[in-house]
Length: 289
Image (tube, helix red, strand yellow):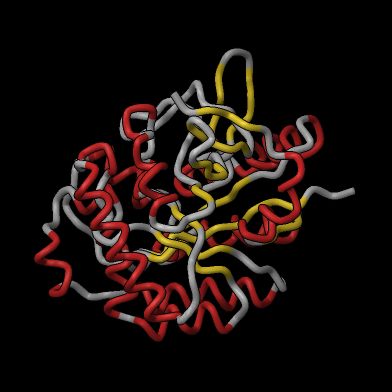
């Protein structure tokens, strides 16, 4: 039986990305050319061509400025989730700042689409070992699952010791929330990332297929794929930013659509809420410390 994998899209504009936002102030967002609507429609049309449903984690700022876009995503049968309001790293916020940002985003998205949302993804996967306190706030605000933890090493994020596959977080049985960790494959003692964002754009497609097969066929687990609408937009404006940020953000933008399409043709995908329903009976408990 083919494994059903989880497909997710983080709906943000090119200037919301971490590589850019550190050099462009939030007060400047409204003065920049927005491309999120056009690029998200490109993604929606691509998924329609392949008859695939996904989870779209929408930035609250986008929902406030383009509510019709959120309505369109929902009308095409996709799940809507929350991607914060201001795209700020969780571990740089206080608990109250995180609560307010998340509540504001959830309200904006739900007002636009008219349904309750149950899934959350942190900007830049910034739910790490030092920001696990955020999970309790997510449940307090009504979220049932999170997809923010990346069990690998990175200079901006990473929780290498976290389980690689779906699990429950809980504390004293008072709360629990399901975690969809971003996918890695085990090579020796390392969890290597693949199948989403810059890893899908920059690394060879043969590497991605090899990792996919390892997780699906050897581990018998779903792969969680993610990407952003701006990643299929090679015509987006370019900023003078440091080399590392420039490499991460702009490399292979002209190849990303083809690579996403290659995955859609090769593997089976569903939204994360559907994956949650399929795997609910076999998700192990993992108590947060």
